Length: 406
Image (cartoon, rainbow, N blue to C red; front, side):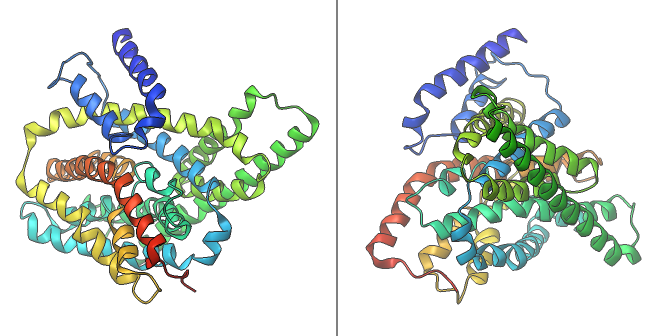
C-alpha cells in the first residue's frame, strides 16, 4: 500500500509542477493520467498493484464528477447562457434522445449477442458527455463563450437526465418491471431523479450561500478554511440527493449554477480550492482506470466493441448534434466542433458499474464496448482539444463567426 501511495504522490507532484505547460499541449490531463496508470500497471512496469473493485472505482468516479460538475456550473457565465440557452436545450431535449436512439440502431447492427434491452442500456450508458474530459474546451477562453457555455450545460445535465432512462431499461432487463408499467415507471423515475436532484441542489446551495455570506461579513471564515465550503457543499448536494432517491449529478450542477450566481463577490476565492481538489481526484481516477481497467482490457479485445466505440464517438454523437442545431444561425464549423467534443468518461464508468452489478448475460460485451469507447475518447479528445480549439477560434476571428441564436 505504501509503495503505491508513494508512486501516486510522486506522480501528482511531478505533474503539478509542469501542469501549466502541459495544458498548452495536446498531451495533458486524462491522457497522461491513463498512460501513467497503464505504464505502471500489470502489463507495464508492474510497480502498482491495486486491489480496486468496481464499486470502489464507481465511488471515486462519482465523487470526482460531482465536484467537477459543481465547479464548472459555478464558473458558468449566466449572462451568456441566457442569450444562447437554445443550444444546450436542443442538445438535451432533442439531441440526447436521438443519440440514444441512434446508438440503439447501430447496436442492433453491430452486436448479435446482445438482447434489445442490453443494447438500449449500452446506448444510454454512452449517451452522456463527460464534464471532466471536456474541461480543456469549456475553460478555453479562445473558444466563443456561447459554444463553451452550451457544451458546459449539456455535459452538466445529460448524465442526470440519463440516470432515470438507464434505471428504467435496467428494470425491464432484470425483470423487475412489467411491460404495462413502462409509462408510469418512466414518469416516476424522471420525477424523482430530476425533481429531487434539482430541489436538493437549490435548497442546499441557497442555505449554504447565506451562511457563507453571513460568516464572511463577520470575519468568521479564515483564509485557509475558505478552500473548504465549496467541496463540502458539492458533496452535501450529491450525497443528500442520492440518499433521497434523486440524481446527485443534477443536484451538483444546479447547485453550482445557483452558488455561482449568489456568491459573485467571493466566487473566485471560494472555487480555487474546489478546482484543485477536483483536478486531484480526476488525476487519481484516471490513473486507477489505467491500472485497474485498461491494463486488463487488451486481453478481452473484440472488433465489434471497437467498431461500436468508433461509431459512438463519431456518427452516433455528431449526426444528432448536427441535425438539432440546424436553423440556429450556427456555421458548419460550429456544429462540427460541438458534435466532436462529446467525450465519454466518468458518467459512463458510473453507469456501467451499476449495470454490471445486475449480472446480465451480455455484461462482458457491454463492459468492453464502454471501456474501449472511453479509452478512444481519452486519446482522441485529449489530443485534439487544444489544436481544434485554436483552429476553431481562429476561424471565428477570421469572419466565420455568426451572431448568437435568438
